[in-house]
Image: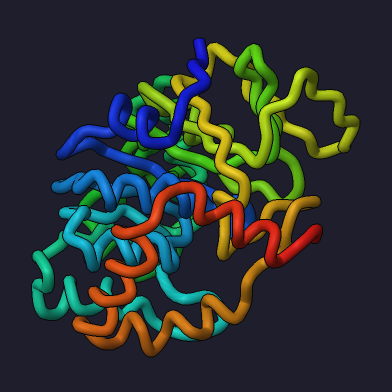
Length: 284
């Protein structure tokens, strides 16, 4: 059952060096505060999963947290490349990393398979694509009933999944709504799950048609971190900080500039700094 605790305690208890870690959120509700806490706690040798790695994984890679990344599309959305990711792949700085690239469909199906405790996912995909020539984890299977050929990829079974959500109640149930990615599937596929939320409430009483409730038994730890998705957005709480994404490009390009920025804005800060961002950008 979910334990309500501080973010520092949640990351210390649930994330270990060498873990397989998924941090999901599709443009909306990206768990930046939790990722920054993992950086501050000096986590190393992580295998990280994400459908659309953007600035958070750029920061974690640049700080030497990551050995391997499994992903589908990586970039600074609307701006350009992830320069810390490129530097690690092309130059081995601060350490060499292994990449495993998939399509969005493959990642989504792989999380589904993990949530169902299956060893692999199969789906119609990669027809005429080049990724199978460079990714040995993309294979083919034949349906035993029809003889049809499908693409197959290993299930994603993280040691821990980390997400940001809107609310949790005091019993440990978690509310997600708005634009959703694969947060639900990633939580159900993982051995442990850490959730940061905008607020903890006495009762979840939403009636939104796309509401997802993660019951308390699916979650390991919950930390209240207002603004914890900044610079991404949290529906009903604050909007996307587009200026942050634009400003990141020159910061991420240069190693010294990057390290100085991370020291000032991550290493010397704490989760409480995110509340300022949420207040600054106001209600969405």
